[in-house]
Image (cartoon, rainbow, N blue to C red):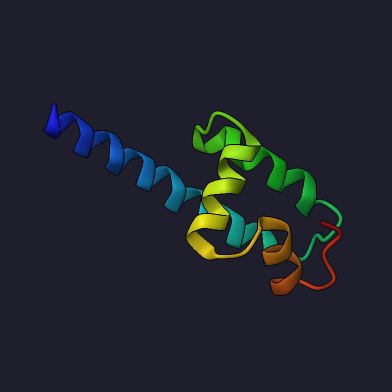
Length: 79
């Protein structure tokens, strides 16, 4: 069972890193009006159960909410 737990933990970590990568690309995008809608799709693309699950993991990992992160990185975003 220990091996299986390690595989599951690694898969979750990979999903989260992929989500961070997508989020960074979106937040740094020039299409400020489209960012919010696209951010709302990241959880589905990365295989999370819900938007809330991704947002909770984001906040735990980054120490800031996804919305605050978006506004910090791209103040002109319409998030």
